[in-house]
Length: 429
Image 1 (cartoon, rainbow, N blue to C red):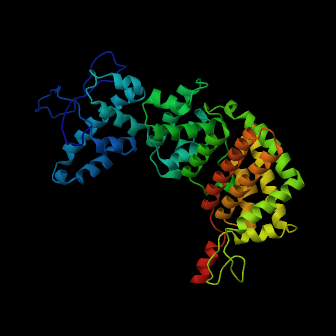
Image 2: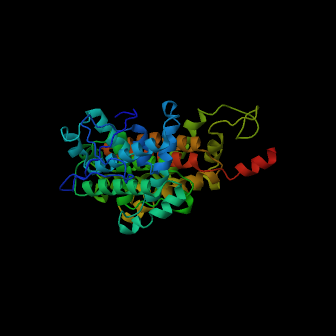
Image 3: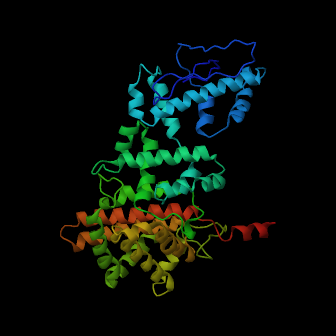
């Protein structure tokens, strides 16, 4: 693929036409009419192609090209004709880009190098995160297509580009919907010749959409596409089977069963829970430097890691310990019920409302949350070894359940805007 400026009156036919048809421009009567067919290798201008998939108009593309150093003095009409020719070529190529594997095989009809073909496919299937965010959790049907004008207005992306991105995700979903027992990422890479990072992002989108994971709740309104993409990767990695696709059946059922048992043994059993609290408190106490004054700061006024968490654990009869126990109960209940469509649909909202917000209400930070989950998992595993003859599967389920919850909470915790941010700005002013 090249960005070189090259004028050509070559007009390729659409593959569905049965004959060649070349456009002629209206000329004055004293001018000659002719059609030129150029047999030199087809050149795709990278600038025009990028603007084309972005939905730019001919006039905007002409302005873009005229900003190039070697195009400043070029005639605008000549550039416009060049752009129109390139756009016609790209409309022709779209037929093949919609069929990536077929496009890679057509080496005689379309004389592009292999790298150029791969670059064209990857660029065409790239997407704008604000646009894709609007498609999360939606059915990819005709009703969603009518929503495209609103998406274009909301995101500021031209509607033609929004339509391309919608049709791309719909095409990938349709080609992959019947593939069971095959990793979805591998299936996308095989059928659409996409690089693994991009294929993984599409797999995450489809996982959220097929399972109707709700990303539109009010408590999730401030999160971006990258946050939901990360959350989908955690859900797939820790709470589905190793050969998971995008279907609900691939939620790991043994994991859910172990999570229910772990909740009864480690949280509902008051004796075990109190013993774990003592162990976790002792572990965290070794990590906290001894400081005078407030439990949240040292002599220099800087925040001391885990001091607030330690203070809560030391007051076992206070509200804080009750809240921590409720957090753990929610964590295990969430994993235990993740195979139910209603729980999976609301999983992100539950994480924010019942785990992240509860930690924040106790004055704890994301670092405290991570430390609490990690310390609890370590000492809970030791307890399982003492109380169970074959603790291996339960320990593995414990780590998967709490690690997944911790990572989801950390992402949603850190991205949650502070309620005191505006107030602090006013005070500092």
